[in-house]
Image (tube, rainbow, N blue to C red):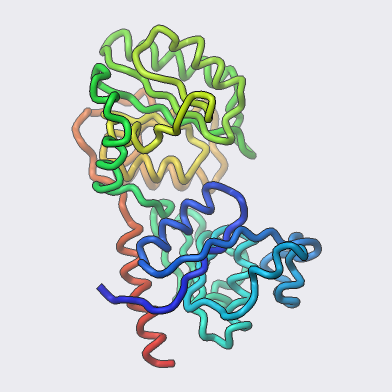
Length: 326
């Protein structure tokens, strides 16, 4: 393995999905890490990452002290706001900082050393890496740690079905009606085949959806987790112990992490999806990784979608080669 030297900055906004991707990639690069949560002020916030002049002035005064030299050897950004700062670092460092941007920056990828954009984003360029899904840490060791963190799940009746709930987004209405239909399908399957249901809400899940599942599943083995009031987040344990995963269709990150487990993954779609998300679903389906809720799917283990380690290995080679030529 190529060893990288210097410090790595991970730059994100407060969005959990952006943080998970950037931090997952940074962990695979195995460099000393500094995580900066930066929120540009107007007009930079309106125009990011197009307006790249101004340096630290793009930040509120309270955040400017964190965006100062010495500059890192590598900077990883995820999301549109972070793309502003990774773009700036390329110039501020005199080209000495290797800049990585995750997700479509919506301008020419040539402003960064490498852009990592999923295939459904349709970003092209000689410096663009195009994984099928989003970057994450899910692997055999991560799943084993998850099982160790929730040993009680071993006692639940099989099949253990994990249910991952996202939330509404533009073009996708996840409301109480959706939750009721999904819960009815889960109950019917449990009535016929037994097993347990482990339902996990995300930060974006409306309370109305959560209450539907609490009421519908109160007599079913398993759990409904929606936040700290329900105890420690059992997400790694649910993925580690799941025999099957049901995921709402809205989140690329959740679907990617579910498909990295290696068990059958299904989703419940009631209406046509936005075009970009529909392309992602179709790609997962074509690869045999994702199935409709009503499809009959074998409980046998599926080939997991694990791309982060390979992307990190390719990046280590690129970063090392650039450092050797500088």
